[in-house]
Image 1: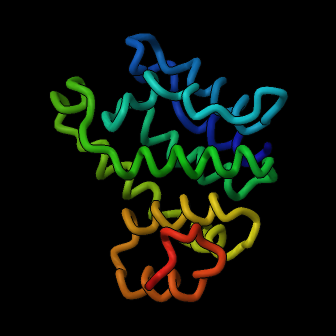
Image 2: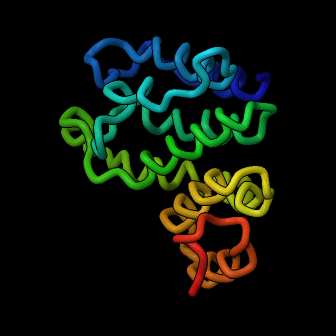
Length: 171
């Protein structure tokens, strides 16, 4: 959990407005708990209403991307790995943002995509790891949103075909 803790501590969560209209300080605690796993495992719904609601993003979404990437580089459970990949997909495939972010002239979707690009090779590694078909599928879906090199994405899809869910395999 060292990488996750390090990344969480880099951000001023208490200065961000959460989707629940409180400080986002509790989001940092939730992210660490999700990375640690435990009896309840990883529940993506924990972040719903705080980091995002459906496809609408809130201020903590951008640092959540970097925490998710740190988690993928850290020693986490398969359940947490898949959960963080699913969260990444929600964040880079967002369709809207909070009124506050809009008023500030921010583009949270673009900021999330830009942040996710810093971990592009982590995503490719996950796609080829063979750890989990579902995790590989989420990694591929995130890559289709963040990697501008369509040829690389297509070639990786073909090379990792047997490691992907059947509906993501090239025809």
